[in-house]
Image 1: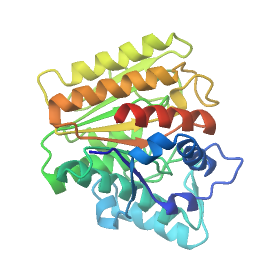
Image 2: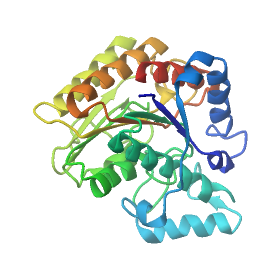
Image 3: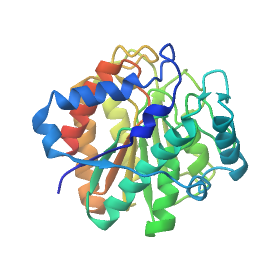
Image 4: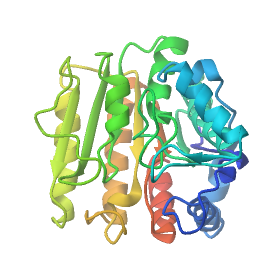
Length: 308
């Protein structure tokens, strides 16, 4: 059964400008890297995802906020905050980004593709219920977690976030649902300033792993794997969702972690092996951060090989 590479052309319509760290060149670099790896390119199932509906976005977001984003895009755009751009094409891009994850969740449960990587933008893990922030419009992974429960009856969902920044939006959008567990390893202190080790959410379903920058790669790998094992002790998820932020790589302009390609491969293989034991291998991964496009593209290729 092939791994699905899920994307949508509309994700390129989110126009932040080339001087913005989160620009369309990130996706273009991934496409180039895959074409330079023809064995992998041919082994993947390439899927054009769908658009999420407003009702599906409202699984995690305030409907009034969803309407606000749509209206802002229709009125030639603007900003949700100083860093978070809405352009004329952002509504189509953001609904496609979320929709790709929902498509991948459907595929995981109906058996077409047990594992998928979603090459999407804008990213999602900072978006809150009623506001966007940190380059993010809608909480793609959080929406997917709630969708898995509502559409497929998933009793337990595990979300793992290795972006260098704390997934404050994802935590806020899932922490009131104790059957969704959230594990985030992130640089501390760093943007957005949340994710303290003692913050486990109102139901103890959150595992935050704040780490200093500049440590040896093994320190990050060991800390994240330890938290994943703690979060799943005696608890078997029906689906694993990964916020794959590649700004955790060494040299990223917006982070201070030191992960290498081999660390991405190790973490990915570990999650695949765990998912095989937990839930017949159901795992959906989605692009979050990562702002050195060629490095991100190389890491995505490594990640995809490990998923396969």
